[in-house]
Image 1 (cartoon, one colour):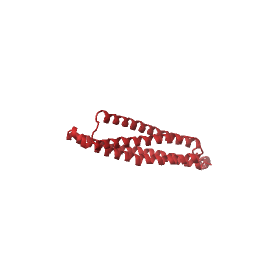
Image 2 (cartoon, helix red, strand yellow):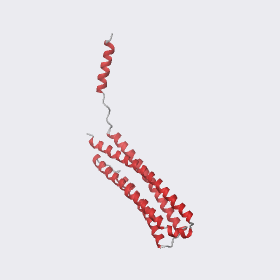
Image 3 (cartoon, rainbow, N blue to C red):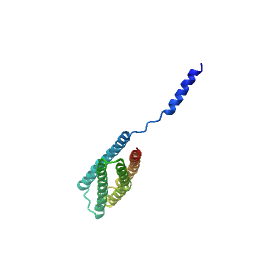
Image 4 (cartoon, rainbow, N blue to C red):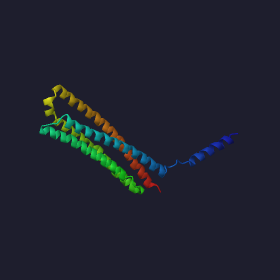
Length: 199
């Protein structure tokens, strides 16, 4: 009577031992890597558009509404616009580099391209982004003496205090986005490494 359930149990255990999880196919790994990189590219296009619009708007604002006369103010405007322009160029270069990395090649070539691309994004998201923010802030600070000739001190305090709060919010948002993008691109490199190990 107990023979029948025992046979079923033995059969189930032996079948369970022979089941091995399917390894991800190369096609699936390539598709996942491409999806992750496209997400990163969309983020870069968003950054590029936002930075370009900001650069155009700030340039127009300073030229039309606040044509500064003092040398210190002109240096401030140059720092602000120059730092934004450098960031726009960095983001545009990154988008172009993404396109160059889309060419066909062996798994090892793709891995090297993705590692190089990750290093580029790390530099842009780190050194270039924070340098831009620092130089832009310094430029805005250099405008204060000439601003104070035309704007009451209370409004000056409000402008610079609100800017400081915006910078803190920007830093938090930048850190979150940079971490997400870096994690995604690191995952792409890991997927490419798995592809290189495929027989």
